[in-house]
View: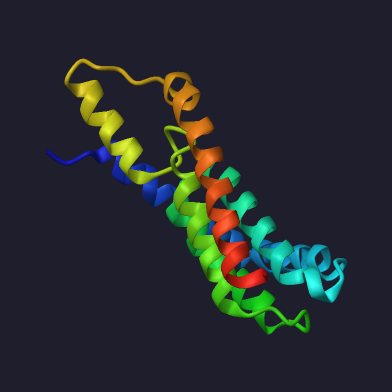
Length: 158
């Protein structure tokens, strides 16, 4: 059976992401992050960028599906790596990946799998509310993101 509601939800999300790119919002996000990271002294930039990208990606991905969020942020991390901040693309990419992936566990709308499973569960008579999912998922997401940041900091910043 086709989950039409879910398919339409994702189509609308991707249309919104494309519109954000067309109006220049993605470039502005990159400019803002460049300014914030650039304010940190050069020796600490990679570590700060890892912390910032991972934590922001996690929180945003908990409330905006992580697939379109990641698609939006790829040009941003590329812009950051090409700036004069001295940041390498690899730790930025891993920060985005871990933050977006783990952030998807924070709420019912954070990941495609959550939405699909909630639809199937509802059809079978087991309603999963946003609040119930959030109560369990968000603390687990926070803990896993902390471990992810520590791992990336050890790997790239220390």
